[in-house]
Amino acid sequence: MKFRIEKDALGTVQVPMDAYWGVNAQRAMENFPISGLKAWPELIESYVLVKKCAALANVELGVLSKKLCKAIVRACDEILNGDFRDQFIVDVFQAGAGTSQNMNTNEVIANRAIEILGGKKGDYKLVSPNDHVNFAQSTNDTFPTTMRIASRLRVDYLLSAMDELAKSFGRKAKEFDKVLKSGRTHLQDAVPIRLGQEFSAYAATVHKNMRSISEAAKYLEELGIGGSAAGTGLNTHPEYPKKFVKHLNALTKKRFFVANDLREAMQSNFAVAHASSALRDFALDLIRIANDLRLLSSGPTTGFAEITLPSVQAGSSIMPGKVNPVIAECTNMVCFQVIGNDLTIALANQAGQLELNVMMPAMAFNVLFSLRILANMCRTLAKRCVDGIAADREKCLNYAYSSMALATALAPHIGYLAAAEIAKEAYRTKRTIVEVAKARRVLPQDKLEEILEPYSMTEPGIPGIVKSKKEKERKRSR
Image (cartoon, rainbow, N blue to C red; front, side, top):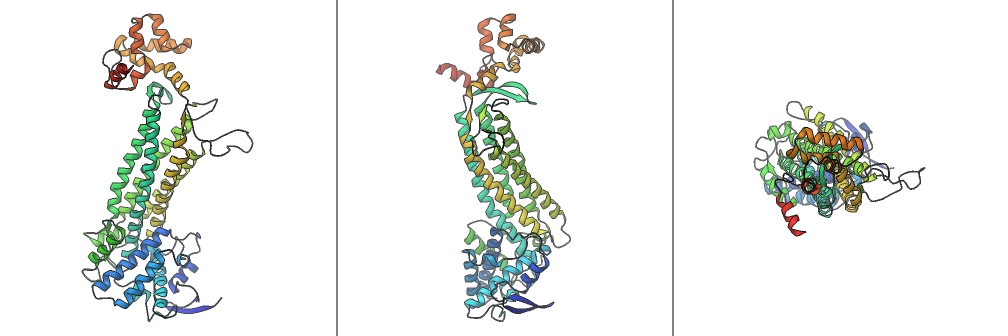
């Protein structure tokens, strides 16, 4: 391999002749052979976008030449179009604050811009990674800005996937609306519910989390760009932040804005931690839903077996015919990872000191990881699981009529204790609540049938006294 010699404040370093990275990225690669993981594509793209907007703002303000700006912008556009991605070589676990990532980006853009101007890689007199590509910038304001931009743009991808999942649950809610079953609390018999109502609640849960994540994403739109090294704006044009955001919004079609206090925007990573916590909350809800699906489909002969999940692969290497709820299981594993990512982000967030938080590379990797796997899991769960769920209507109905909790509807008529006695006798004698109540003649037969009709218990009302609006409509339609 042929090398070129590059120099920094520490001395000289050999860099592969064909590499677009330079001395700083080379040192980082040698210093941090930690995980073999490189920055997510969306972080690279957002960092390059930051460099492009900085050049456009600086040329507009007359502090960067048009010739340099044109070369830098062209280099950025080529990277944004997918070129040179293998030149971003820094491990995600790197020097604090992300200086290595920033300089890797500066060097790739600079060396490509040098070529565009007719020079050879490493000729930084033509285009300097520090003096030109990084002009009016510092890692300390560009890395948190990049992290927020990347996260904000990725949120849209997640919200779209969550919407697909909510719609999938919504369709099943309509399909299963008339499927009567027993509810369960404490995993014990509870009053009747419709399977469609359970799925409607799942859809509502996803929608609620969408609102939470959308609200959290608004904080990601506040940027500390222009703060430079310590949030004071040293070596930046006073109008630079506003010009930067103008170009950024034009390119992203978003509403990013400059923070009122650039020091706070640099010291605190509240925005990313807050967004991550919203992702964690969604993960917790999704775990619960996935576990419900696993429980309701348990069996097929020794479990609840109220629903069947799509068979997507063989479930055992030794038990023939076994099929497992693998999509729901994968959902849980993804959500566990998101919760772990959030803990890492929380610890990194509190580790900020004075004018800077140096733990940002770990925060960036983990929040973008969570956004990515949650979005992919939502789409997979919708398409390969929820869309194909079927109900065992007969089994569900049998559970509804055999539930001990049907006695609840008798309480307003005969009292709680008397209803409890009927429930205990039904359980002891292996009969239904209806059979025991009729045998005891606690109420006229026709009244008992009206009160103990399970469907009427699935809407607000007092069976036999006050009918719900939906129950009245159902009676009229018969």
